Length: 481
Ligand code: ADP
Ligand code: F6P
Image 1 (cartoon, rainbow, N blue to C red):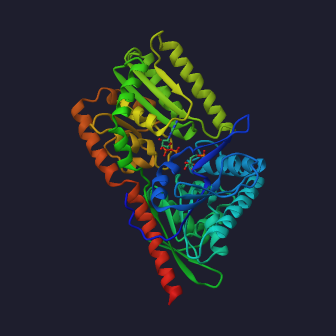
Image 2 (cartoon, protein in one colour):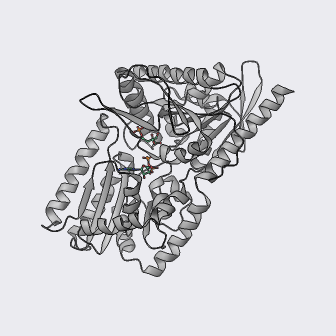
């Protein structure tokens, strides 16, 4: 993968490091790939460019840790106390911002103590970066947990070129308006030189909020930000839809061992005529309950035969201490139990539910094994699973069912689009996907594959980092002159 961008030093900043630290009962430390789409997308870029990566190692109360090297990355851990994990991460990030930014699917909670911890932890991240970044480095800040970092960092280190990328949706202005701290959040993000969003719509909403809450005029994709001395800076705020390393997924899908494993998976689940697959973090934004409801009703109505069809639902453990996630887990597991109890038999389980993480190889084997991938998010920044499924379907078979409310919908026109709130519509989409003739599958999948291979992660990174590199270059020319 050639990114073709001339960046001398890159500093990545995200809430989590790309690896998570887990300590077992005997005190043994194990590092595992962190969950979620951010790492999937960013990892291939940093493998090529190398970087310093500042982030939290993922365990509460850990004492200060020294930086360490993994492949081409220098990882710089930012420790969080138990209270900070509860109030900054589980609280403000995942109890306030996450539901607010996902169209208030769950009720956001607004607590001043959570906000105070958010400010404190964002400052620690900014100070850590300021202490690590070389003069004139490019710093790329990721996601909603760190929206104050760009502004704080600009104050601490005006020599840096700063990017901010929001991996999740940015809400409509009338929803964002609820946030008691809407002004400092917008001002914090505007500390960046380039602000990236997943979709055109997200970028538009942000620019409206920049005008309303920071009094910053906009011209097209540019936001004009003035400082106390009335100097004006132009900030780029536009869509840069994220993607995957399509080539790597395709290469793995062509691996005979992985293909063999895909056949084995089908046998292990009872050699169904049709195998459906859902892969999601166990998150209320992913529409897992809606999917199960539609599937359960089709079984109840005899529209699908439980002896012939299996749905594998991979539900990756996520944010397990947050109330809304515990409630969701209970609801999903009760529903899966009911469906299997009512429609299963000794030799056949209509829903194979897997609450665990898998290797990339196993994920690719699952994508190869599945006739239909089911993505029914109520709201999703992008949804990389949809793109991964498409990238793995080398023979152009298979059907992607895709929610209208996932960012990926903007690119993947040839999917079977669904509104997950419309259960009858979802049932019809399930039947259409299950029964789709091979010729139609091929036509749709070929078009989807074309889109995903053109707009892969290298394309995303080159566009985004290219914009940052141009600003960095301009700045160093001005300083040198
Ligand atoms: P999000 O970032 O909200 O979790 P995405 O669909 O954009 O959602 O990205 C999820 C990423 O995590 C994908 O790369 C997917 O392959 C990976 N993933 C999801 N579940 C698992 C799992 N159980 N084991 C390993 N990887 C997983
Ligand atoms: O963008 C969604 C996100 O928060 C990413 O930062 C990460 O990829 C994923 O979800 C996992 O979330 P968490 O770090 O809270 O487990």
